[in-house]
Image (cartoon, rainbow, N blue to C red; front, side, top):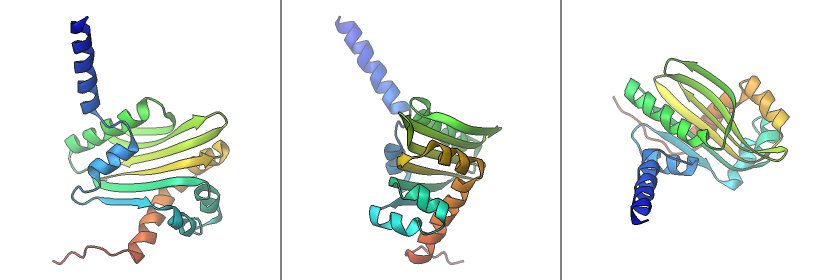
Length: 176
């Protein structure tokens, strides 16, 4: 009996160290990495983002949590690592709505449902130079999510978030 408990404990330790199992863990682990842009939108700022367009108002108006992260992915090893981490996050309880693989490049839209609504949306992109994810937590209409994924509105939203925060937030100026 003691051997079984030890074996089970060892298995749990190994699997828990192997990958991230939530966006929160991944975000906190990488937000301080070099050349990373990380945006965790507070509740009061969600209203500003909802003014970008009527579609964004419809989407962001129901969001409780919105995060965006962009990170370098310039080596095959790093790209593979990031792809595996995102697969670990979405693999257990998310449903893939869209996936496009081109060697190590990835475009993935995944959702987590509860009854007749979408509760979480995770969009992950990696082009072998830059990786990014856009994450929503809230209560969303599945038809609207499908339409936005089809029309690549999530990609535009990620760019708009960076532009919105980039123009008003203090930044790091690089000097050549």
